[in-house]
Amino acid sequence: EAPASPTNSEGDSRSVRSHSWELVDLPSSEGTGVVVTPVHASSTPSPVRAMSSQGGTAPLRESTSPFRAPVICVLGHTDAGKTKLLDRIRSSKVQEGEAGGISQHIGATMLPREGLLRISAPLQREEELEIEVPGLLLLDTPGHETFNNLRHRGSSICDVGIVVVDLMHGVEKQTKEAIALLRDQRRPFVIALNKIDRLYGWQPDTSASIREALENQHGGTTDEFHNRWTKVRVQLAELGLNASLCWELGRHEKKDISVVPVSALTGEGIPDLLFLLSSFCQRFLSNRLAMKASPLVCTVLEVREVVGMGVCADVILVQGSLHEGDHISLRSRSSEAITSTIRALVTPKPLEELRSQSGGAAAYNYHHSVTGTAAVRISGPNLSNVQAGSLLTVDETKARSIVGALG
Image (cartoon, rainbow, N blue to C red):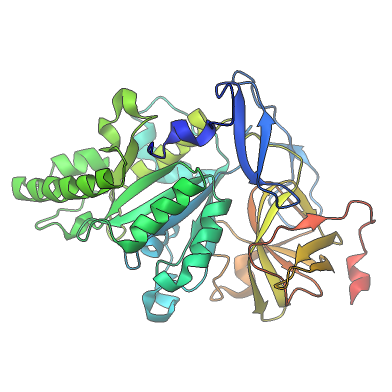
């Protein structure tokens, strides 16, 4: 079986001419599977009108980016450091609030372009690439084996995956499962080789690229890294994956799996990881990530009761728009149709977690409408029995309700 790679992500055996057809791995509104959209490889995505990120009735404006934000799903074995890695990016402490330090739900965080530019600034000075994606929507999934359904849900929504591997333990059970999920979904992915700070004698150096940080270590530390990395590389090869350190890819960057050594504790490698993801998305997924007004692509992550809002549905809006007063349809746990009306639309503020309760109302933005890629919390009637993982559709034949009249 061929390795899951950027080359495979947009090609498909069902496409006669993979160079002229983009395989859009988004669920159709009927939930019947893959939608294949013809897109000429040389076409340039046109800017579309995007809603302001601020709440209220801000007017539509021209987006400065031709892309939507890619959805990045973080997967890996329990205790590999997935949430800790995102905590380092967000400067947050979400992991400390989880029971036993283990994630129990899917989390979602928007890393805006400004944050992306700030974190990856050292790499931008070395590379001739301007980051154009408006940000990265990061999904955090539980690693414990009992949460297989949540990992499957996250991997099916994402555009690109990050598989976090503990350098000290190598490829583990849930690592293999995460890779299998991404390959089944035909999603490209990179590997974050975490916990390099546990190498004996590691000297933190967050001002340099990860390659330079490794080269600046003492000889014994560098030798231990290469020994442990070689073992991981062999384990990945046993899974049919050709993996290389990100700076060793060269002309094989579209064929091999990129591996970025990182430390979620001290921060090395995180700028390299984020810059690699941004570069990868812009160069290899430009058709997939082109901003489109329709069709609506929106999937329910989880349903939960929220203080002050009642029962809400947390959804990932990949494409299209949602508005207050929209009449929506979803699927129940018994596969029956459920109808509701959007009473409120809430998104976490940049770098805040959708599932986090610690920030209260101040951690969220309230909107009259939301457009483009976003993690959204929807309040409305009849949501308690909604099936997580189901698609949300909007009934365009009905006029939007006046929210104030809904009670």
